Image 1 (cartoon, rainbow over the protein chains, first blue to last red):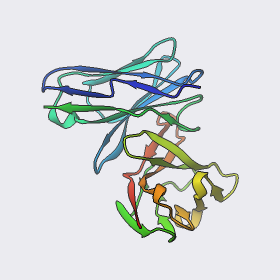
Image 2 (cartoon, rainbow over the protein chains, first blue to last red; image 1 turned 45 degrees about the horizontal axis):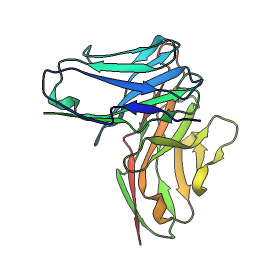
Image 3 (tube, rainbow over the protein chains, first blue to last red; image 1 turned 180 degrees about the horizontal axis):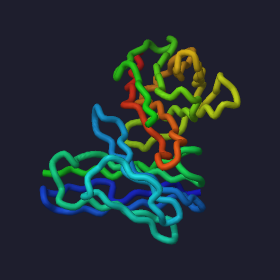
Image 4 (cartoon, helix red, strand yellow; image 1 turned 90 degrees about the vertical axis):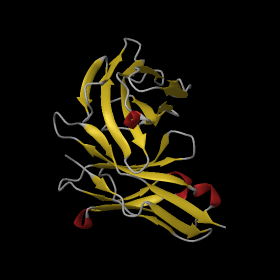
Length: 114
Length: 115
């Protein structure tokens, strides 16, 4: 069974640009959650999608957005990039909602903003 | 909202020694609790989870954790550390409150094993 796949793995952008990250969950999983990981801050919850609907959203500005497609694949977008957006962005999938079950994480997309 | 506190951002133990990583949660109602491990350049993977079935939870790779309601703690232990245990460990709590259901992670503890 294939795991969670995130693309791209590494990317470099400059301030003001926008970026789209992709996440393919494990087959059959309906929930996709996104987290931002930075040194010292741990994992900060961005949002969760379940069956194409956003269930919950973390405390991030509106520049951060996401969506989920009918095949459960998810994308997140960050517009008008700032230096502070440099981080590892992790996607996790689960069969049920994220707060009740085991999350399966991808290896992440490491974003560097110059 | 639920929160977890992990005491000690860095812990070093000698190979073969006891591993103890501390986690305290904020809720007065027993929530779901998890420990995840992250190896270098990888995503997180689940070590173990507490869902009220038993207070002592056994996980993978010889790790276990004990839920103590009186202390609001869920510390992770392993009797004998192995070099392969070097990684970052995250405690997480599940918020079941309507409208805020999500998993909240602690800031992590980096475990170093001394040969």
